[in-house]
Image (cartoon, rainbow, N blue to C red; front, side, top):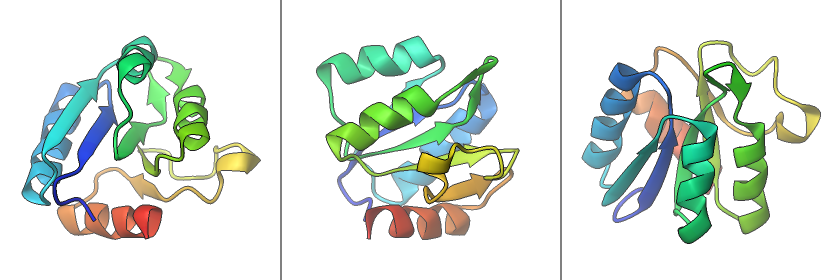
Length: 117
């Protein structure tokens, strides 16, 4: 599921982002890119399409749902990772797997399997 994959992480907390990057690399991802703002994520997507993505929902007071919409439009699987659970997601995104922080590598692996399977 992650072996050799390219991944976009959208996360504004550096410690969480680096821990997630390490987990993804341990799971076999080859290219992990980090965006810390919505604008950075869209900037990355201007020239790239990742194999999948992990999106924090609340990025510096903005929601990442626009990035989620663009990924969905491109057919890129993604998951949300948030401290708020999935209760706040818009109806169109309710079925997206959501990791509740803090999460483990096993939690991540399971969510990725659902998103990419």
